[in-house]
Length: 345
Image (cartoon, rainbow, N blue to C red; front, side):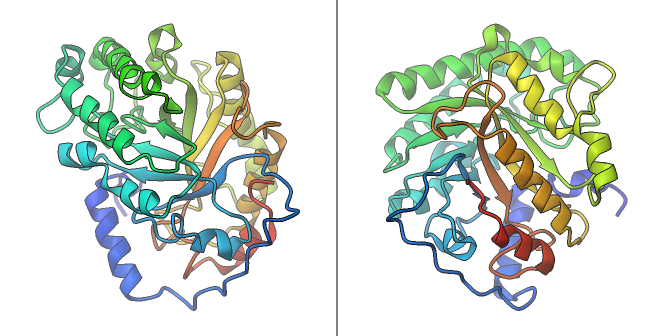
């Protein structure tokens, strides 16, 4: 594959098409469902946990939670493929209909299709962003909260809203406009809506992540998408050598470095997308176990009120056939490891 970094992130349309195709033909024998333990007498979750799921495949309806033996309390969906997607936020529909009570992270898009960070700084995205927030308010249903990840992975190079060196000032001004719109359209209306600065853990962008931090700390949650690649996290040596790793400018790269950085910023940390390498089939139970271990080590006392440097939620990327764990998988050892652990406990 000539451009491995770009293949996961090229377009949500391709993601949806691939998901539909794999749904028609199972990848392997589906793993058997495990019944969820009865609600009575269960320990309360310590962190919000679930899956990133393009068509609510088993998250909203409870199938993923039943399979793993722990109800899903956190999920990521996308509403960023077009301005119509941003305004309609159609992936919320399944959660609204199911009266799902978890926290939904919504990747709700940034400037694209003629809009730029420069035009957004002058108000060019305001009407779209207000429509996004109003739709979310209308479709809120039984949600306990929403994380709004506008322009997710903006520190990469693969999306229309990727921030380049000459975009930084406009981006920060645009972000302030976005933050204020969320306060006016959702928070002031009594909704538990958090603004998430959703980044990629390892980016080829020449823009320092530190330079992208919104002024006046106009965000509530720091989010990071992390996969078992670059480096390939398959053994203890690779994990330990990368765990605390920082870039030359001091920006975090390793997973614990991200937790430490979030604490320094006074923000909790979420993982709206995490999983096995989605660009190359792999079966990596080691990575699954280590992710659970570090989530547990950084879990809050109250999953609904995480403090600085504590876990605000995590969603396994259960979407592409290369890394999906359920209902069919090409990574049976990783899937078994995931089910053996109590994610959220």
